[in-house]
Image 1 (cartoon, rainbow, N blue to C red):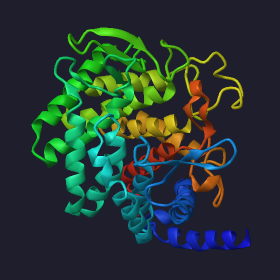
Image 2 (image 1 turned 90 degrees about the vertical axis):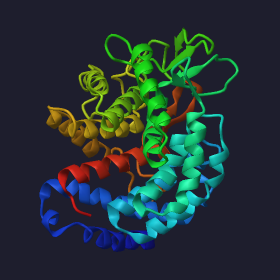
Image 3 (image 1 turned 90 degrees about the horizontal axis):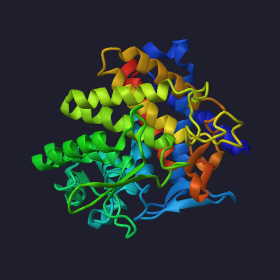
Length: 400
């Protein structure tokens, strides 16, 4: 324990000096500095503990770590977290580890049966290429983008999420997140059809996924022959008609991202409407970290009875930060996102150095209805938390 404690303070010193001189003495950034120290320590230890190709996904009830293999939809998040960690700390060792964990995912380029290719490849290989400019990452990204685009149906106007036999043509709100891969691929590989598919998917989703209050269904099942909506349902929420928290977050992030890529005012308006639903929800806790579904009957009970979902909060923060730079009244989105990040960076959610199996955040929910990953760390909670911190640093001009 003493060695761990001492190592933490060595890392503390390295990270602290990575801040620019103009930011070091700003007391309003103390929380950000302390958070960066924890990030630096935890990610370095995680990279030393886990092996490329078997990435940390969550923690099982017995305390063991659930690992993500090459076909797991979450497998791209840990390499992506290492890349973000490198950007937030300037530690080149994290970049070296990120490269190892990224390259181990090369075979994902051959997967064709899921929409999750954006999560799997764009979060890992996409960040790798964005940061390094190394073109050796491009062939894998090209194959993955082509396979994602191949799941688009002109008849439905949307990308098929899963190939499960009990659905006809399922499209889940999570799919909005993977459109960024197509927008990027359209520009990178001169494939305008990718962007056209992304635009179509986003517009069809506005039409069919959202209710009058701008909350979202989790899943819409279509007739693949006619494009007609067959059923609106859930695979995650407490009921078909409920507002599953992470689903609302996916929608917010997705439309803010779509607007950034297209400047289509419909996408900006949709993002702002979703933001209003989330920010003004009467069941949003004071710390701005939602329970796993806004419509659970005991949403305002103790955390034990109504588990919070830090992953949803992190994604919401990302979406709001994007909106803050695009919308006319951007400050309200920035202020709300800052509240979320300060909550997630508090002792209530941010792990202490050496704890939490080296994950960053505590208290997320994977799939409550299936008794899976309840009140646990999650790799994608960490990923979007780091992304939000990076966006916040850029907006606040915190120089790393």
